[in-house]
Image (cartoon, rainbow, N blue to C red; front, top):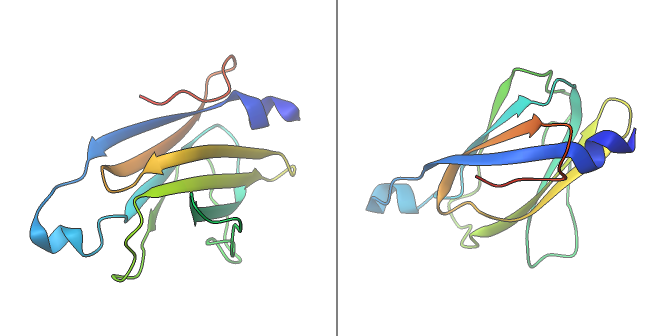
Length: 119
């Protein structure tokens, strides 16, 4: 079960546009689950925070192969965020210090060897 906590890989792609209009909500991103496992909970927190906050999926889940758009209030100014996912069997995966001001897609994959890789 620890396999997924340490074997998930994260590929960051699609650099966000830098227009003035987009700057208002530049942290918004699409989370794509390509792990092969269902994700039951997702937490996104500013890297400077000591709290994960609430599960942004609420009562929903993310089966493998699905995409979820994550949006932030316009007043959000931080760029560096941490991401935690909890799989259906209770295992966790975390990625720290994702610069969401530069990334618009976060794809979670499982490669079977490394903890996380950022591309």
